[in-house]
Amino acid sequence: IVAVLGLGVIGLMSVAIAKGAGAKKIIVTDASHGENTREKLELRKFKMARLLGADECFDVSLHDEKQEFYKFAKEQNHGAGVDAVLEMSGSYHAYEDAFKILRMGGEIAFLGLTNGTMPIDFAKHVIFPGITIHGVIGRRVWSTWDLMTDILKKGLAKRFMKAGFVSHQFPLQEFDKGFEAIASGDALKVLLRP
Image (cartoon, rainbow, N blue to C red; front, top):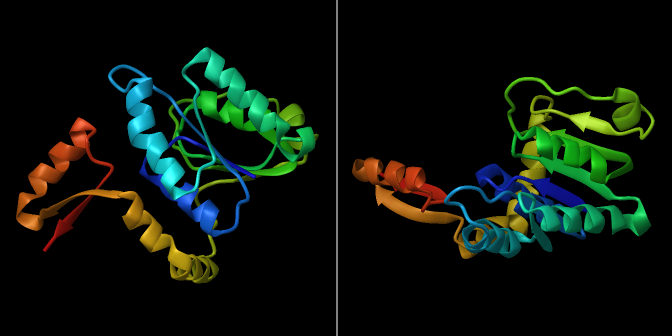
């Protein structure tokens, strides 16, 4: 059971990869704010996450929904919590959430880049629960390549395209339109064709 915290492009890709790698349940979070309302979050990111394999989606900027997320995540594995957390947002609030929902002996991958520092009680959050923390560096190039090749052969590429992961396509000479689509928030992933 995997939780993905943060549904930017890489977070959404990780949902599909977790599904392709055999995750039996995927829980995702993101946060609405400003013009990115709960409704827009549902239409853009949560809809895409479900198409890519997410089972449950939570807007953690809303107090009640965040509490539902904690409750749901902690109920997994007969009340032990989730097996793995993929933190993709770079938010220290999400880092805290990761420690709250992870089962003893679970694994966290912190991939979202942060600003500043965060105090952490290593005894409480790492040592006693026996968790493993992964960062960005440390992948095994050939085994990662083989794993992704296998997942792609099982239909991951088709799942990306069917879900509309590449939301906009432009000729290379119209690259400025691609940047505008990304900057406006209308595009998820832009493909520039030569």
